[in-house]
Each structure stands twice: as structure tokens, then as C-alpha cells.
Length: 571
Ligand code: ATP
Ligand code: MG
Image 1 (tube, rainbow, N blue to C red):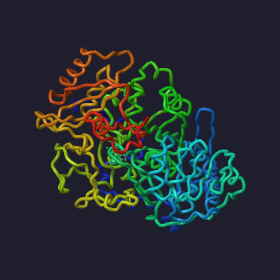
Image 2: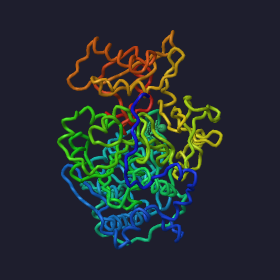
Image 3: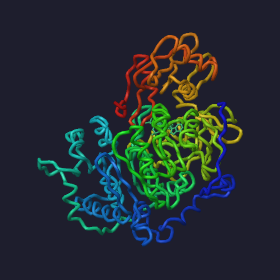
Image 4: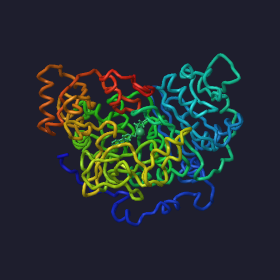
């Protein structure tokens, strides 16, 4: 991709010499930052919360800075420690045991975070579900995980098909419900009488901590099982990649129903003892800008889909806010279009740092560090301790600049330990010692990795392999185009032709001239073979609830095929 490279800026970054560390680093070096290294007693909830609550200098520091339309609240490390103790006592009262699955289906709120740590303190396995899930999605996940206890709100209870969930013994309701039942437990009533001290359940580093269901971009979501050991990587990537320091105000926009919202919305900031902003409610550009401004956010972790919407909202809006506190911006979840990086330089005078990882990987693996040059369109380089490569279908490494399977040498700390209830699926990720991601990418001579698309999304047109990401990125550089999703459409002559689905920016009307102009724009800006033969204007592009373009759905619609699992489709 022919974009200006963006050099690193001067700064007091936690990780300055990446290349040097890369050759000397061992994961064991991180152990000394945890109290279990000396005490032998492990629990991620202790390291993230209680350890700070026991520290006279940290205990009254604001850990959670919560705001939502109509509610503002802040909790210190000491507050979260006590409240999560209380909640752990509630769970014990109802006989929750180590290893039980306890699920959360509720909006982002202080109660969510308190409950989450309460679960971990009992040694149970937490399972967060995104609040916008409808009945089918809730049913699938609670059945698959055989959850015993669910924490939810009276509003969301309607979407919990209790008759289909024989394993679900108790439902803890955050909020009032008039009709009494043996099954329902009142959160606030129980919390009021629960003790603020609790004997935390010490576990093994390899004991279960979390089940996250994947986004469902490529098919039925998988229940990804993570263990306490992941904290090693959450902590150290918080240092290196998020560059967190004691006085930072950090905001991760992801919902805790997705892995980014726990690994980086909960663990990385709190393992590092940093103030964490949680914003409830729905996304609007005004709301997000004012959150950055009002809380003087310094480090911001967000996603391409939101950034593209901010780009569309225009520069006038940017000028209304003060972003002078902001010093570090990162992105994850989808490829970061070069156009967005260029916009970030203008809008915030900051570089936006792309990071690549997956639910299955538990933490960041390939990233752009603040101390390194950014090549817009590239997801960066592997962090120290991670060996990444491009392999063929037999797991053999292939040379630079050739597209293949993006793979990671298996065995990093935060790697999933199972796919819940599906051992053969788990095994299918590993070939020849490599974890094979399912993403297609290439590596350049300098070790930067370039995402091309999901393996299934790569388009074969007239003998050329085209990644949809490149075409989409070029499309949105056109002033009329807001978002784009690109697929291969079977064609008897060319194998596949490129078909683009786009949404238009405000002020643009669909016309043959405009579509031809867009086509020419890709043709001259990228290449003739990558220019879409068909362009269809839509009101919206189908996305997962975590904000990812669902190309498989565009394709099934186009071909009139069954749509498969759509439980995570944004409505
Ligand atoms: P499912 O596995 O259910 O199909 P999903 O893969 O979208 O859904 P996640 O684990 O949330 O579920 O997302 C991981 C995927 O997101 C990666 O495999 C990759 O395709 C994409 N992704 C994440 N970050 C980046 C990035 N920085 N650049 C490009 N792609 C990314
Ligand atoms: Mg996936």
C-alpha cells in the first residue's frame, strides 16, 4: 500500500527498544510483577483489584470512572474490592463452586464489574454476554456453557428462555421484579446483608477464568475458554502496547461481552492500577468526543467501525472538543484503513495504532508500538515473546511478500486452553506447532504484517488473489463512500468478480455517474483487476454486534444461500 509512513514520535514510552527486548525477553521475566510469584497464591481478581486495595497509596485511587446517560459513579480499588467480596459471598451462599459457569447478561454498569470480580473470587468461570443479544443468542450460549447462575436485569430477563435451560438454577436480578420465585435472587437485597470480607479462592494459573463467545463473523460463535495465566500477557501488553502509566486515564470503548472489553476493558488497566473510564449507552460521535474531553482521557482503545463513523461525522465536530489530554490511540477488531490513520493525524494530531489479535489469542499479538514507525494498512509486528509467520496449509513457513495463513507459534500465556464442548474444533487450530488464525496476510522484508482478509473472504479473480480489505480501504478514500464491504461473486469467465456494497456519506445521491467515478477511483488508485465490477449502494452494511463487517452475509444474500448463524447480527 502506497502510503506515507508515519515515524514514531519522541516520548517517554514504557517500551523503547523493541528489537533489543525481542531477542532477550522471556515470559518468565514478567512473573516478578505478580504477588503470586512470592506467595504462590493465584487469582487474577486479587492481582487486578485486591492487591491495590491493600496498598495504602493505591486503595483510594479511582479505579472505575463510570458514566452513562442519567448515571455517574466512581469506585476506588477499595470499593470494588469490598463490593466484589460481598458479591462473592452472595454466590457462595447459593453454593457456587470453583469451575461453575456463572454468566452475566447486563448493560455496562458498576454492578457488572463488581459481579464479574465476585465470580472470579469464588474460582468460578465468568461468561459475559453482550446486552443486545436476543433470545436465540442467549439460549445457545447458556446451553453450550451449561451455566448454573445468571446475573441479569428484569428488562433483559424476557430474553432468557428459562424453559430451555435445565442447568440454570439461579437468576440474580439487578433491579426489582414484583413476581416472587424460588429461582430469582435480588442483587441489592443480598448485597446489603453480605459481608465485605471474603476468603478468596486461590486457584492454579491453569484454572478456568472466562468463557467468551467469538463474534460470529464467519459462522457459529465458539466458546473460547481462558485461564488465569492470561494475566501475564494482559499486564505486559498494558505496559508495552497501551503504554499505561500510573497517572493515565484510560478508556476502552469495547463492551465486556467481547474479549476486548475484558482483556483490555478490565484486566490490562487494573492489573496496571490505572483509572478506567467506562461509558454506558449507545455510540454517537458527539457522545464519544465529549467523553474523551470531559474525562481528560489520555489513552484510548477503540475500533475501526467507530473511527469510520467519526470520520463520516466530519471535521467540524472535531473542532468543538478539547483533546489535549489524549496522548495515545489504538484500534482493534478489524483492519484499520489507511484513510483512518491519515484522518487521525489531522483530527487529533496523533497516530492511531492498529493491534491484531482474536478471542482465541486472549491478548494482543501483532501490534504497532508507540516507539515504532507505522506503515498505514499494516497491523505492525509481533510483540516480544511472540513468534508469528505466514504458513501454507501444511504449516510450512513461506517467504516474505506472499499471501498465506497468518500463524503464531503455539504456547503464549493468554492462548485459549479449549473450545468449550468442542475438542476437535480446538485441535483444528493447530498445525505443525503453529496456531493457524484463519486470517490471510503477508509479511514484508522488515517484519511488518499486512492483513488481507479472512481466508474465506480472499477473492480469486482472473487468476489474481485479491484481499477485500485493500479494496474496501480504497473505496472509503472516495469522498462519497462511508463504508464498504467487498466480496467475490462467482463468475463463469473470471472465477470470481469483485462486488462492492457501499453506504454513502451524507450529501451524496446514488447515480450511474457516481458509481462509475468510484469504480475509476479504485482502478486508478489501486489496480484494474481490483476495481469492483459491481457496486451496490445500501442503507447499511451488515455487521456483527461487535462492529465487524459480515462479508459472509453479503455473500449469502447475493447468492440467495442460507444465511447460517446470525445471532450476532446487529439489527
Ligand atoms: P468468529 O470467529 O466467530 O467468526 P471473529 O473472528 O470476528 O468471529 P473475534 O475473535 O472477535 O471474532 O475477532 C478476531 C478477528 O477479527 C481476527 O481473526 C481478524 O479477522 C479480525 N481482526 C481483529 N483485529 C484485527 C486487526 N487489527 N486487523 C485486521 N483484522 C483484525
Ligand atoms: Mg474468528
